[in-house]
Length: 90
Image (cartoon, rainbow, N blue to C red; front, top):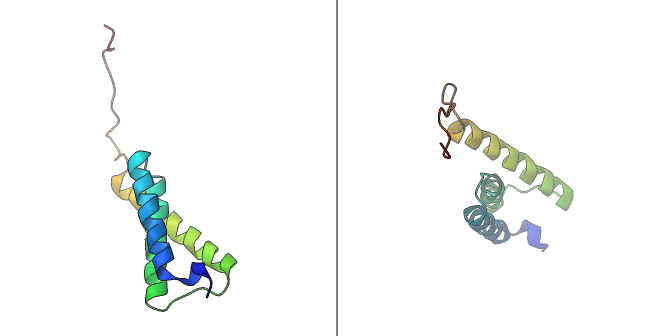
């Protein structure tokens, strides 16, 4: 059985990516971590894509969706633009 069809591989990848997000913040790796976690959950409950390429496409779509949701939830709200009137060197 190939490794990409194992749920624990995807969950392990999610933990590694989430840890990488802590080290390099910016909500980049967190979207991939959430995509990997959802992919692991889908495989755990028995929903699996056929073939490696389709599995990667599903992972990419899940990662994009989670990134866009995080951007919507945690992103800069309208009207919250910070305008600086003074400079730190003044």
